[in-house]
Image (cartoon, rainbow, N blue to C red; front, top):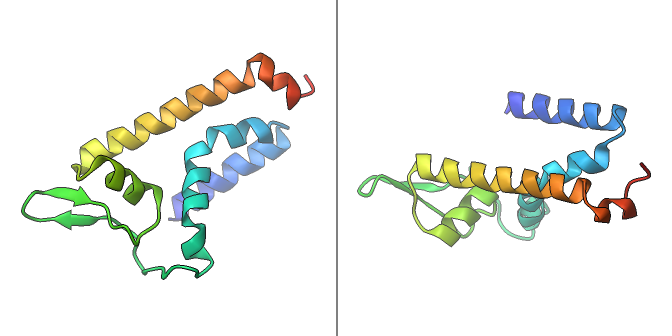
Length: 118
């Protein structure tokens, strides 16, 4: 957790001081989706368990999503079905790469003129 907080703060500081906070926000699309999906649990509208990790099935040796745990990892498992940890990591990293590609496409397309001065 400490590394995640440190890395997130580093990205935030670099984005703000480098004057590209809107571009940086585009690179965090998966994290924003995770935050928005988690809001009901974060504000207490839905019970928030102490650990919101997926369940490991000892017989199948696969991770299974838990509907009551509202985060991107569990949502991915609910959509795809049970996956191994390696397969889940590949799916989530692929989603992050696709979102970063989308961020570049948005940033350097004619649409960017609506949001950026340069």
